[in-house]
Length: 342
Image (tube, rainbow, N blue to C red; front, side, top):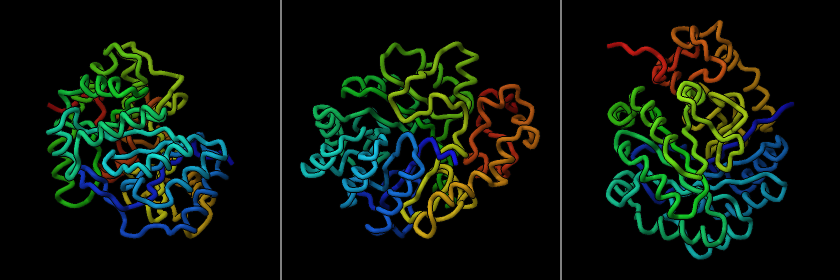
């Protein structure tokens, strides 16, 4: 059985910050033995890389053992951290297995950064990013892109360069919760389709040696329209040989073991729990699911996606469409290439 290209695993629900766009975490968390068993199951699936995040992954006491076990089997490991939970001991733990460490920066300067990440300190994150760079395992930054920081696109690139990073991933704000506060935040600050297009134009027009990835399935179609290239030799958390939505090609494991296609997937896209059955069985069930079958078959899709001549290189965002349209056969309402109503 062909395994997922990558696995994204939130190893803990514990966090020292309260980010305004946080997807939220389950209250339960795998114990040590369960986590090690899941790590072994991940290894059996042979993904190209594993992303370890949280919560804040550095706050789980056995993060070093989990990461090292995966890395020792020849699988690349990425750690995504908020940069505010470091200690000298945790830095040494990272150094013991040298993952590629990505720092989450949602503001390129102090005020916006600390407003978005409640409880964070911008200078602290910068300092530890520099320390990781000195140790040789700082990979770059991830940025949740919204109306709040839309005017700072180039500043994020410069920040990554100044810190000695190799890559930057822009992740446009996606629907992330079912409560009223989360929905209000999304509708207030998410980018419009036109703003998405402008962002892509500006980012890929910037002269830099960084590996840049704009994490939206329509990226490849915009690249075709505007004539810019997307790196085929990625140094970041990207799939250079897969165009469009990664649903059915990746796994997201929540802190309690729940398995979904990605971290933004709603509960109805859960396919099992990695602590209760072999992860291989969950992956097999997901691959055979009717939901993903419909999603990938254009003849079964409705609206703009069903008529799009570039469907195979996009398919839209499954998680966003399910959350906003409540329809697995529907069309992604945020695509900038879809004619918008006046």
